[in-house]
Length: 344
Image 1: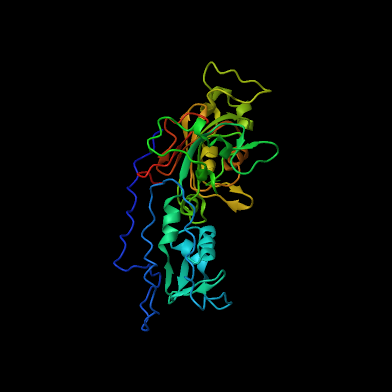
Image 2 (image 1 turned 45 degrees about the horizontal axis):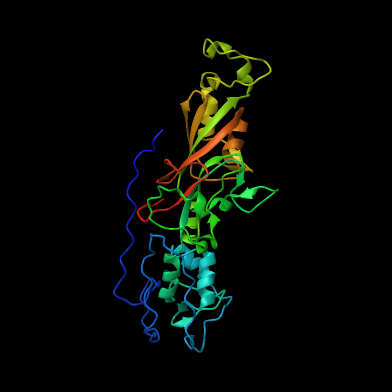
């Protein structure tokens, strides 16, 4: 079932005339210390991926004499604050701080420092250049591959990212280079028995958008099921006329005819996993043997475990969409770059 149209992405704010990015909310009465001219403002993050380059080396003598040290005072950790503003992930923020690219009130910040809304935080352009070189990849994962690190002898999906499996019809125009594998990690899970759309990214902003605690990005799945519940044994009169009801086997054809509507409602809202109630889900019949799920969360093996609670067994699961990015015609086992025009 095609997804309904979604509103266009909110365009990024335009950079101000200032040469550095200020993250302080109210203007403080006192003027901050004079800033060196070689630390311009960090513009809004570029969406277009490109060839990755190593981070620019630190110029000699650039650090200030008295860096801002970590303290136990009230406030928010600097890496968390940068992530909350959508500038980077916490891991990237730590990397920026380690490189000396982040300043608090004009002084180089050290790891673990806390900030308040009154502090002026600035970021060097070198951080933005590093970010602009990061890529995001869309893969059609086959069965038999795990999303993350290799486990129990199974191959990780990132092993499929190489020139031989790069989709020839990739519209991005980018060419694969080995640095595109550096730090490439899955933004979400797709278990070993499932297929479909898997996103791998070097960009912490993309990872936070897709799998952060506050993520609202929905994901669409096609799920083939058989019915093993008690109603499968005593609902022959509601099945299709030619459907054979076998006492030893689950219902494999025309499952929709025998699956109770009340249980479909439970799939939509009313189930819990790991002691926590699940968020409402969109669940509808795509055809008599296949359900369509749209979720806004991603617990481990969530759909399979949801189905088990209502007497369904999943025999096939395919993710076809994440936000506004669809699997489309991407062949199984092949990948492409996320285009500059694409937004989740």
